[in-house]
Amino acid sequence: MALPKIADARALSDTELGDRILELKRQLFQFRMKKAIRQEVKSHEIKHAKHELAQLLTVEHERKLAAASEAATQA
Image 1 (tube, rainbow, N blue to C red):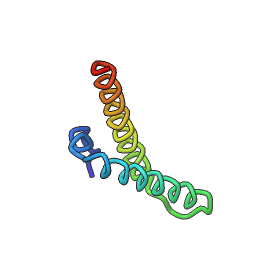
Image 2: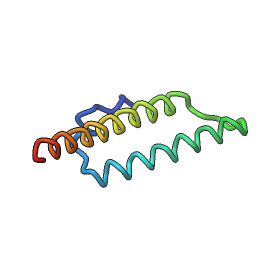
Image 3: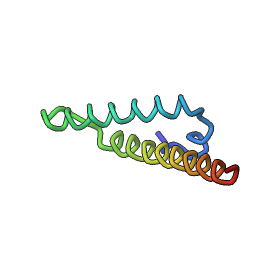
């Protein structure tokens, strides 16, 4: 399974982006719980989830900055 591309994250709508961020945070929490109780966890899945979460948070931040910049130019 390849790492997700940033273009895929940029193609999501704001609501889809927020939903996916929550889903990945829950998934990472589940991975931490599995590790704590010594269940088998595939380490590459943790890496992929963290990578995708970072991309989604970056896109979310870019959109917030763009909205703030646009609001400042209109004011």
